Image (cartoon, rainbow, N blue to C red):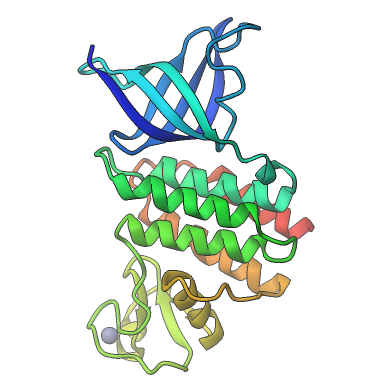
Length: 253
Ligand SMILES: [Zn+2]
């Protein structure tokens, strides 16, 4: 059983049997993995509070060839993120980002994914009450870009014709982005994307200034993101629960 040492971040954790926890981690060396933390529910255990949701740390785990569940040997927390739990806006956004990673991360290692995700959480942890939604959306679109399926915005996703910068375009989830009028006329299910919504997507994907959004615009962007993700899911179409909860929460807020 090879021992692997890597840095990692806790995406999800749940109790397993009487004394253990199963934890989903995004790691630098192995990508997204499931590990069992044996004894983690005992009062005195070697993990302590290190396995809190969204904590970063140095981990040691043993892998078994042919098995999807690895054994967590140690987790030395280097950064906990209590600030994400201080506001529901931040927490709901962070949970949606974690879900994105859990559902879309490739099986293989992708060293930069951990950094992209950590950066998104850190930015969200400092978000002011009014900006948590737009900041989380930015993190989500950058994760999408990192995973290699960013939507096209400045040329037609179908025929590659250039699109004028400041006009409304059609956006088609399956085609993978904006469409020119001719292609939009032939595509079913395209939706209108106003210029300011396209600008916001450009800002997020280009790591520019986070746009301010009013309530209806925020909800429209959350819906656009969720529908885009649903179109690209390849794991059987289970609902994106955290994404939906995040959308509902922002509606109540
Ligand atoms: Zn076209």
